[in-house]
Length: 364
Image (spheres, rainbow, N blue to C red):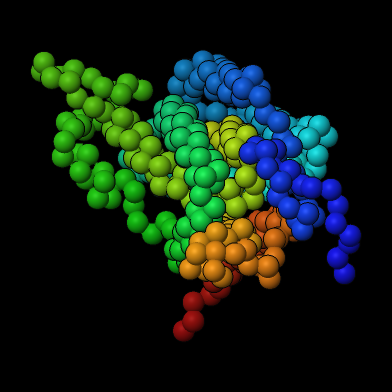
């Protein structure tokens, strides 16, 4: 049963009446992010990465488990505190959007770490230099995601049909993810073979240097090649992470901060859960479920705000439901939990079975 019509609902961005039939205010327009807030946020983000580089990365070393655990806990705690701040000062609708986006981006970032591990192994990067590679790779990821965030915001602002594209793309990626996204070796893929043909590469590492001069000619080191590989992978991952989070919020500020916090501490997390990554055997399937869920959510939202003339005569599809953010948050959190627990149970069972097999007497 519908309630009586309320006061006109205003589009605060464009200053127009959305109509009395729209009884749900467009809350996303109430998150007032001024240019000063953007400048402060970006400046603080840059400051964190500069601090990371000069304090932890500049001197080559392999981080200890204790160091990695402390800094991982610090960055995760900071991300959670920021989300609480959004909820308290801007409303829990936005707080829920932030937490759903952060969880999704963190899960996708852990998937990134798996590929980074494959690349590091493929290029045989010494552990004392892996921090530098990771740090540069994470900075590249943040820059690329910033570009995609700006582009996505502009598209969503002007073209509602872009939700159809985002939704369909995420459904395609979900299928690819479920089939297994780490079967090939990124260090020896087509792109890296092309790079090797155009750049002179030394056979050995020269400390943490990216280039060296030999016989009057400038050569790049395998470390430089590793950074190129990680940068390319970052570009690929940005193509799915940005449409995914735009399926949870239309606020560019929430998209940016969720991505920034997901990337902060990723370097420490790499060294903390490096051994655990190989045990997350169902991570790809879990991410496939999350991407498919967000893809369906985007398609439903596209139908709900439809303006394409060849779909329902250019009218909004009234039966298309809008999935609430609290349900999205619960679904994403539950999926990550189930995938993690199932992975650990399976690998533990496999190890026990292998131990029992090795300890059993040979059959005669």
